[in-house]
Length: 144
Image (tube, rainbow, N blue to C red; front, side, top):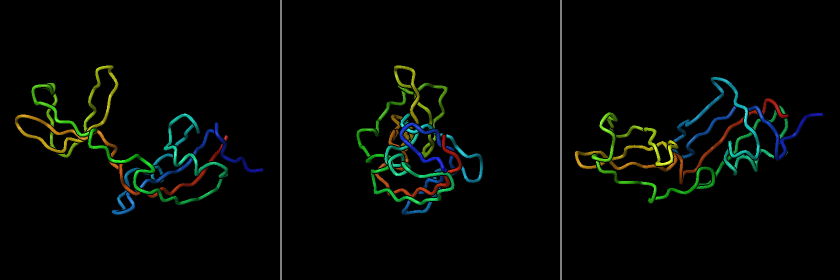
C-alpha cells in the first residue's frame, strides 16, 4: 500500500516553482537533488501543504496559485528607505542585488536593493514572488 501524505509526514519530492506570467523558474530541485520537507513545520508554503495532503509516492502534479496565495501579497511597508550612513561601510551595495540584512535580534532577512544613491538605499524585503501568480510542478518520491 502506498503511503499518503498526512499532516506530520516527511516528504521527499522534486519541486519547481515558476512565475506564472513570465515562466521564469525561481527554484527547481529537478536538476539537482530532491528535497525532504516536514509537513506542518513551516518548511513549505501553507497553500502547497494543503494541496499535497493525500498524495502518494509517484504522484506528479502541477498546481497554480493565485497572486498572493503562495508567497503572500506584496506589502509596500516592507520596502524601506535606509540612509547610507546606517549601512555598514564594508557592505558595498549594488542595485538589483539581494543581500542578507541583519535585524536587531541577529536574524537575517534577504532584501533587494531596488534603488541606490549617495544618500540612501531603497530595500525591498518582500519575497520575490509576493503578489504574483505561481505555478508549482512536483514529483512525490517518498513519504514517511
